[in-house]
Length: 281
Image 1 (spheres, one colour):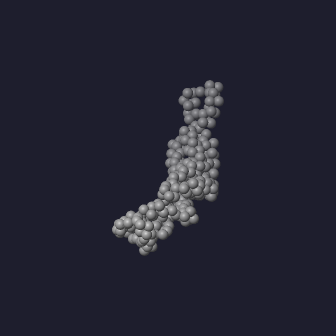
Image 2 (tube, rainbow, N blue to C red):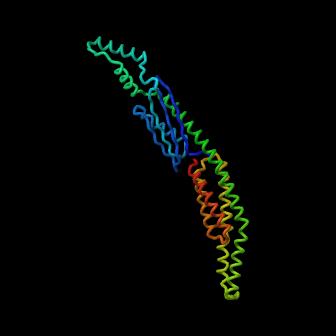
Image 3 (cartoon, rainbow, N blue to C red):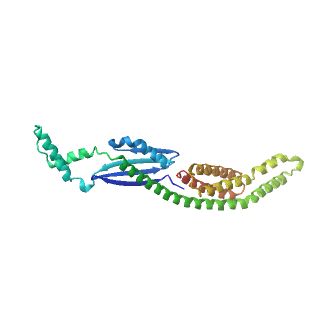
């Protein structure tokens, strides 16, 4: 089981410049990808988007890549840079240009201007992106394990509540029978004066066995899905919705307070599981 929630950070140092890639993932019904790249790397957005979609099936994924000089490098001008500036200055003067000497601040500004147009090679960029996505996948898997453990706890509690309801099924039917006999005695009705079709219909409406059986079937399928390594989020969401529907019907048909109380407990557990299901890939 994999969660859709996760975060990762990967970095790369190249020629005194630090590249950082942040990836954040949230739950979504489908796969949504938002990518923020520096202007000089925007041409790579296509294959990065495709790579993300191949790596993940669901989730809202935001990727932000930027680069900067490390703090200790902010005011540092390398010897190679100074040497390059002098060579170009000498070359310009040899062609008759009269140049004014550059100050230290001018050198820092020139360095930053050049770095703002720095283009990372596609090979290095791919390595950075893949590392980010691999770390994101691990955080989603870790979150998924936690979710799986809690869903197992919830399903176990559901089974206990359902078992209690099963044991009270007969009492529910007997309650209807006693009610019928009491009304018949109070009104002093003979069998000929009673519409048996309506009586049977009333008994049928009080029978919760069908809802119990269907709920058990859905719960068994959910338990099986939690052991699967496939994408299960949408299926879990569907089955929790079906379990909620069966519980509502069961509660409306129940005649004794104990069953209604267990139905309320089931609804609470289902809602918690449904929240998990909406965050599972």
